[in-house]
Each structure stands twice: as structure tokens, then as C-alpha cells.
Picture 1 (cartoon, helix red, strand yellow):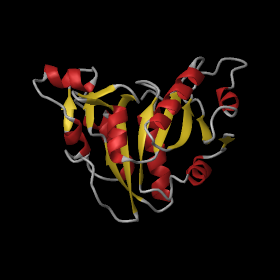
Picture 2: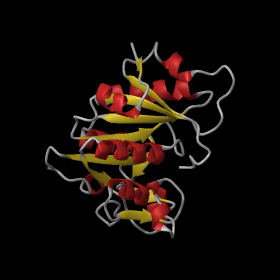
Picture 3: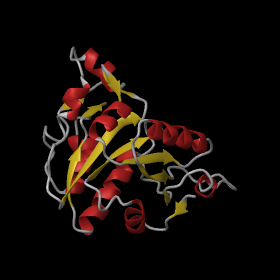
Length: 224
């Protein structure tokens, strides 16, 4: 069944992500740590010799300090300046992207979000695309994160907060990814709060998923 991997470098190898052309990073929900995990993935990929192309097609709740935005953190991790190519659709309202866009009197379409990602890149490069919210969260006026993931066709990395109740969420999203005929490359549990005594979601997920599993340890600075 599943396999618990002790380090990020080993997880990249076990999932096949390191040799893939790129990934689509999604979550079980909003605020589970997709960007924090993405930053660590980008750092590891660069250490291993890949040139990362970061993309956050749309971000709502855009901050005045752009370095603190999700897109800004991904750009910094990739060692590139934050520009409109990385995140062209930026909205101040901290709402689902299509609703935030509507408030700004704009319409978000899946084709436009997909067009933010390159069609071709060399083998040394790696396309890192981060969605917004969970896999079935609204992303555009005409679709969900799942729809963009399908258009791009990249292996999917699923991030979940390691807390009571996450097993249900992980398995539901894993099934949704399967139904969309996408590859679930692996699951990363992000520990954002001190773990509950006796809880071991990583071990429990072993019996249900046939993908490499990794847990990021608790760190009080994990806010994104």
C-alpha cells in the first residue's frame, strides 16, 4: 500500500516528482500550508539541480507586501523576481478567486489561468503550479482547481494539515483526483499545531493510499 518516506529528498525520488516535468500542488482545504510546502519542494528541487518555473495563476487576499504573498514566496524560493508572469491575476478581497474577481469587476476563465503556464520547457526546468484553496474549490467563473489540474495534466501533490479529521479529507480528495484521471504523486501532511496525543494520521493513511507519504514536523512559524 502506501509508503512513509523519512525525508523530502527521498519523497521526491519515491514519488517520481523529481523526474517529472512539473507538479500541480493542491490542498484538502484553504490554509493547510500549500505555499509553505511548495517553498520547501522548490528549495529541494533546486538543490537537486532543477530550474523551477513557479506559477500561482490567481491569488486573492493579495497583500501590500508582495514578498509575503504566496506568489512572492514561491518566486523567492525559485530565485526569480516576482512578476505578472508568475501571478497575473491578483485580487485584494480574501475570498474565493471568482468572487474576488467579481468584486473587482473582472471575469476569471479557466483558459486564461491555463495560459499563464508555459506550453513547452526544457528537461532541466520544472513547472511548479499552485492552486488556490482545495481541489474542488472554485478557481474561475467557469471551473474549479480540479478543472485547471485536468487541463495541465501534471502529477498532483496533495497537502493536508495534519490534524484530527484530515484522513477523511485526504481520502476524498485522493478519490476525486483519481476520478479526474490524474496522477496523485504523493501526500504531504503539514503539522501546523502541536500534534494531539495518540494521533498518527501518517500511519493510518498507509492502509488506504498507494502513494509515498511525508510529514512536515511542527514549526511555530508555519503560518501559510
